[in-house]
Amino acid sequence: MYNFDEIIERKSDRCRKWDHQYVCSRFGDVPQDFIPLWIADMDFKSPPAVIERFSQIAQHGTFGYTWCFDEFYEAVVRFQAQRHQVQIDAEWITLSYGTVSTLHYLVQAFCQPGDCVMMNTPVYDPFAHAVTRQNVTVLTNPLVVRDNRYHLDFDNIEKQMREHQPKVWLFCSPHNPSGRIWTGAEIKQASDLCQQYGVLLVIDEVHAEHVLYGTFTSCLQPGCAAPENLILLTSPNKAFNLGGLKTSYSIIPDPVLRAQFRRQLEKNSITSPNLFGVWGIIDAYNKGTAWLDALNIYLKGNADYLTQAVSDYFPDWRMMQPESSYLAWIDISTTGRTATELTHYYAQKTGVVVEDGSHYVADGENYLRINFGTPRRLLTDAFERLRRTT
View 1 (tube, rainbow, N blue to C red):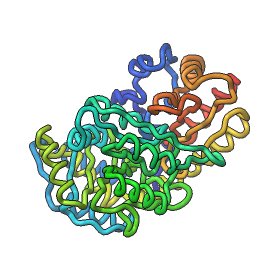
View 2: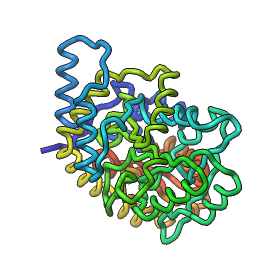
View 3: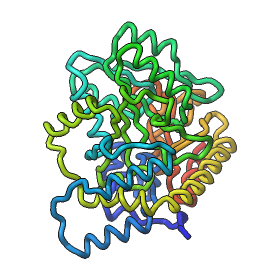
View 4: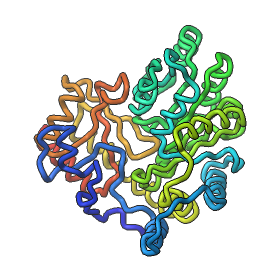
């Protein structure tokens, strides 16, 4: 029903992932026939219902201001209940202009210059940008690798909370870049520590819809994170390939936290949604879940292929199992080369563009991140090129 093997021509829309000029600005002299497996942007068309809605809007020809009308809230409430088995009230939801910008507003709302914010490294680099741009300090808490899987170091977390008194813990669930799915018990332990030491728990669940292995537990599940000390950030952008619309939302159960956050949004004039963004959420959530289920089966097949290819062609690499999302996190420490050296070498010599793990705040210098959210032929072609250089 859905053709995820279709190769979509993406250079003409000047998306960053496929734009030769932009890629060369990041990776040097990259050949014209490059294969981009770097930024977290999939190479699949969005669900048919979303495309149909956008076509209707475009053909209608008016693009005026809109607002967060009832259908938006109803779609989010229904999707969270059906997909993640959580019950939320519409009043908890606040729409904003993308998760990255929302992180900035959040730090502005709850921190002062000189404060610190905790995050588990390696982690999505905009976490750190959102903090440092407000003259707030990043407090890195390294994840621990056991059996080729990341684990939270709760002893060190508590020690840092006690000594540094962070205002906020930015927690990525599932984890980007590794795809690790945290258990409900782990999230509860994190929440309990935050309550004990007066730290606001902010959880990013943007990658929660692509579950490949295991079971995802939302922080909103009863008995998981304490709702009175919780801010959840999420969006349909990764799940349904809508990142360019810059539309996301928060779920904040506590009315005092919610009011404080909304005051900061008003200061930044975050008042009305993108017309395509709000309808994208509605139709993706209401009509796109069958597409999402089919996509996840395809992505799991890509993950399985990638696991085997790494094992067959690159014995010095060690790939973590991507429990969620479409991003492979690969340890290349035994190769004797840094991630920065390898990414530039591969990009310039083979045209295969992958992400440098050193970009992920800290503790990723010996890792590559490879985006397998692409038709399998592009993935196999890329690994054939890489294999020939080994």
